[in-house]
Length: 159
Image (cartoon, rainbow, N blue to C red; front, side, top):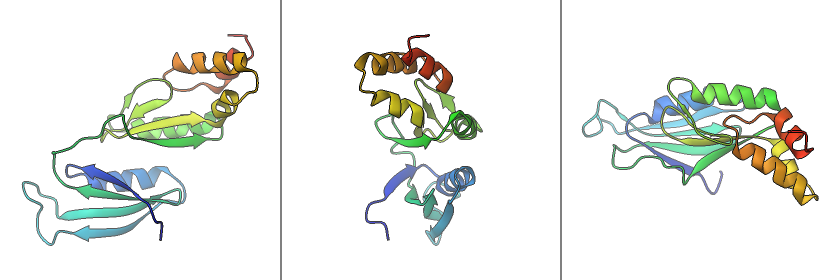
């Protein structure tokens, strides 16, 4: 059992969100659904929690009403091997009403923030040449969805 799990508070879409997320990531599944045994107060939902895995990482989604909403202070980071993965996760996470933000960040239709980041960017940020890393950083700050080729070009001074 995983010792620390991220706990996500939803109004009444915990199961819907968990099914959406597990449809996107490989090695993902619904682990457990806990029922209230009745409808949750003020809703038509009977599900209390949904434990699910995304790429082997466990999360718990809770239906607890509208008292709290997600903020950008917490986001889920998706390490993407290449542009193809960036494009895939970007499109899938935006399905159904998500919102593009900036420099690889987006909000899904539930308001949860995600960072969809190409591994190339992480490698460029660790470049021993601080000017090269700085050019890559500046390029990323000007993007919405990351573009690997443009990041590399900017790092190389060919922007």
